[in-house]
Length: 161
Image (cartoon, rainbow, N blue to C red; front, side, top):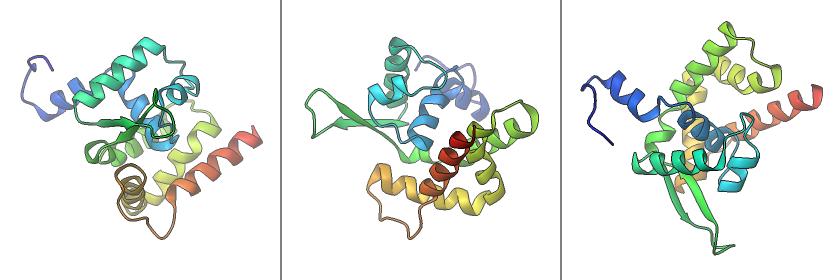
């Protein structure tokens, strides 16, 4: 990373995450369970370009927010995972989603997960972070799946639309 403009934690966070695509890539890893480059590219609602995606994944890896490992099922693929630092972004993304629900014309199908997180508050965020730890870091599985609840609500909203 280049020299920072200041040591302010908000500035430093924005320097790490404040470009147009970094949080979108983290969102897709987190909520879309998109773990391969091709999935991140082709299933992007925003239509990220392949060179931009490659750059953001490299930046996020360098910043310690994403890790990569070889995919044992295919020698030319890698699996991207969230790190503890990016999993800790769940409350920030939940707040951003809640703000977007109240202040933007967000679509119903793309808002349903944000609404569940907004309604569930910090307790649900913590449970989701625990589950992400299982999915991305190999931590023990939680007794209930927040991810499945979010995914089911999203799929129902898409079917309705």
